[in-house]
Image (tube, rainbow, N blue to C red; front, top):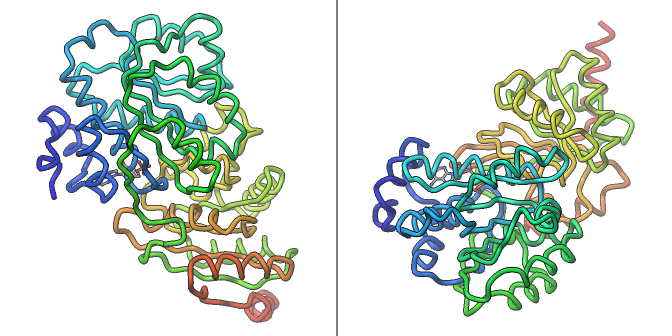
Length: 384
Ligand code: AMP
């Protein structure tokens, strides 16, 4: 299957070829044709599957073919939970819409609104937004949603996890009844199923890699390690393997900061990224990571949600997640787009039950190592 066979128009084809996409991913193959046919979509897909292009490309195509886009009233709204995701979606649209005259902008909280309202005043076709800032600018009269024709709710499960349900319930009635809605979620608990059925009309359900399935190309191992030895183990692994791009997951923001400090002390270039960091600090850490100035990023689950990094070599679960599905999300960041990936989880005696749940969900046992054994060897080496 090619993008051309999906009836993508020439200006977009040219842009995606430049972006290096050769063939559509499964979610794109499944979702693009019904979206181009104006159907509502219920998409079950996690980050890393190519879902952004799956919803963005058909919308750009429709807007391009729609002559009334010169009105520059907002025709498409893409709602996403985090600023990082919003920026990432916006960057993708910049690329895909490069050879069309479709205009877009992105709004999110935590920064001054001036540049955002200036961009809105000039008029845009597509608005990418996080819920809080959207409501804020709507209340101030900068944004009207009365001419929305396309509405995307991205990462719906994360939206609910982050407590955005009330914001969403305030936004929904402001949208016109007549519109096309594309609803994406990585998981489908009851609350999401209920929400989706309340806003979708006769949707086409598309699904790729259910949450329990882990990409086959990821090598997964677990180290049994005492809680107090985790930082030693991390330094040891990073020094031994010297990976170029590592994402380390910490359960707490405080923990992420602590790990970053320990690594920097060990001369390993790293930075923590989480909700307590300023927007600027987060962006700087991300761009340092993307340009290989630092090789290790330590993140909490929520902060990591929006990070789009290709060819991530290693994912480390410094703390095991409380929810087993989160493990699948986390390690999905390595082994993307046909690359082999590596994930290493640290499991302290207190976390044994969490490991059991993860192995049950993914239906296999992780390759296990015991740090105590390695530590003995390491200690001998250091003592020499
Ligand atoms: P997403 O799931 O939308 O976050 O996309 C994950 C990554 O896959 C992004 O870096 C995209 O640029 C990339 N991607 C999306 N579609 C394709 C494709 N058809 N071929 C290659 N890479 C893609």
